[in-house]
Length: 326
Image 1 (cartoon, rainbow, N blue to C red):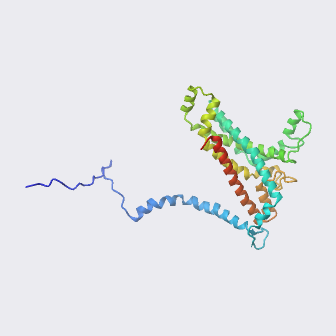
Image 2: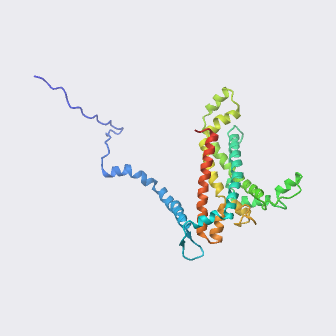
Image 3: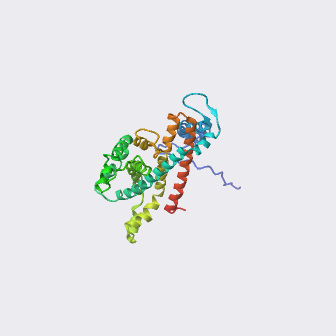
């Protein structure tokens, strides 16, 4: 008589929990599948709804308006196709605003990011009162842009400005009318932007530097690397993503510059008597809300959008080459 000793292997029972109850698998029901698959989309849906209302819809609506003869003063809109873009590309005032915007952007952004990087590297050292110094770097950022523009407008005054007084002390007899020429007005506006945003970028760079392991610097010091060599070989490559972020944000902010030149022009949109410092944003507001040609202003806004994309792409390529990325 033979006995069959082979028995069917049973699935191991789940281990009991601390309370003595055994864990059971969730039922494969409709609600459980809905919770696993649909709940993540439901949780992130408020962002996409807000973006669709306040971001995507204005973008599409502005594109539609840019192809219309759309006046804010009244009347019916009529479809004109690409006529607004054709006129805009032949408009010397628009290209003057483009040159002004790019010029102020270069004068403001390049020194701003370089100074912020050097300032962050200095704040990353062991200093007494580092917390107060770091907080002091952010003070210009919390200052109202209107107050900053008013103060700097007084500093750049032709007759009683501080900068002309300093030039006079250095032996320069001729007082500079900072608003009358392109180079002087660009310089004045660029210093406003640099004074307000250099500390902000420095704190961002400092946050990136704080994430670098100290062991890398210690190993480099043992190998005989100088602090300058450590900065170029360790600090810059490690904070490359942070540098890219600041470059992108500075590009967008610089090409959409509006408040500083408007206050420098005493709340005028023409950017001086000959438009010597009128930016694209000022030109858009002038066409849309002063000349009431909303379709023409919308076309200028879309060309500004294209210019920002080109600027971001160029800066991204440049930063990757500087950082040594492949």
